[in-house]
Amino acid sequence: MLIVSEDTCKKVIGRADAFTAVESVFAAMASADAYNFPVIREAIGHADALYGFKSGFDKAGLTLGVKAGGYWPGNMKKGLTNHQSTVFLFDPDTGQLSALVGGNYLTAVRTAASSAISIAHLARKDAKVLGMVGAGHQAGFQLRAAAEQRNFEKVVAWNYHPDMLPALGKIAEEIGLPFEAVDREELGAQADVIISITSAHEPLMMKDWVKPGTHLACMGTDTQGKQEMDPALIASATLFTDEIAQSISLGETQHAITAGLITKDDITPIGAVINKDHPGRTSDEEITLFDGTGVGLQDLAVASVAAKLAQEKGEAQQVEL
Ligand code: NAD
Image (cartoon, rainbow, N blue to C red; front, side, top):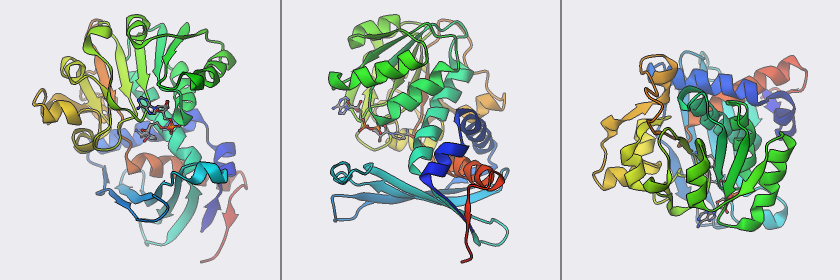
């Protein structure tokens, strides 16, 4: 059994590996070769924590496992990340535990890969301006991964807490992109691609602010009650997601579904586009919207690659159970 630490994950797995792993598992999900099991998420009544499991099996990639973890709001004060997770991988032929992999860095990397995949497959090829709504922990990972998908010339950004924007601006500077803090209406007027990655519970971007041809990757809404987009914007866009069941229950489309503006048949799994069973964007004027809800199979896919690379590079610790 291998143990792969957080530091080792950072050393061995980069954006390109994560992109390939997540793209493959999205494709497998769309062709019913991989499926996520029901998610468990519970308030444990201690330390104000939310704890749960995301698990699944990828028959194509032979990856079986579970991500266990959650959110401990008091961690920051202890010098720890509030989100904590660990991935357990099992041998699908025997059920034996094959690896324990730190899941915190991998969560950020797999979430950034998800929106980057949506940009690669759905954004206009001539997209020039990247709009960032949000500037928290995930936003920097999102920005770096997105910037590799198109020849962006500029980043425009808005955040609910403006004091967090300079740190995101620094990342834009590092990758050589001019950065401008703007209001949300201006962001919609300028951006060709918009990533939202906040913990908002009300619409941040309205339909009338988003120009034709925009691609949106909505990444923040991963729980019932959260919301980043105007339901009218959702209803006017061509909709894609990682998993339809999660999108309509806890993802960004939940509110448009409840309001009766769309049905689940209006949403396409992005794996169908990857598999070329769906054309994706069909015109330069169309607004495409990807609802990235975050599925367990993404975690298992990147953890499996991290374990393999760590073993190859002699960075994994081997123990007998
Ligand atoms: P964070 O705590 O580091 O940052 C939170 C962000 O939300 C900041 O930009 C903050 O200014 C903003 N924010 C806080 N309250 C707000 C409000 N009322 N209105 C608008 N913005 C507000 O969190 P993070 O780790 O960057 O995660 C951001 C979001 O992404 C969270 O909702 C998290 O659950 C979600 N997430 C989704 C996935 C996925 O796979 N889809 C994966 C990881 C995290």
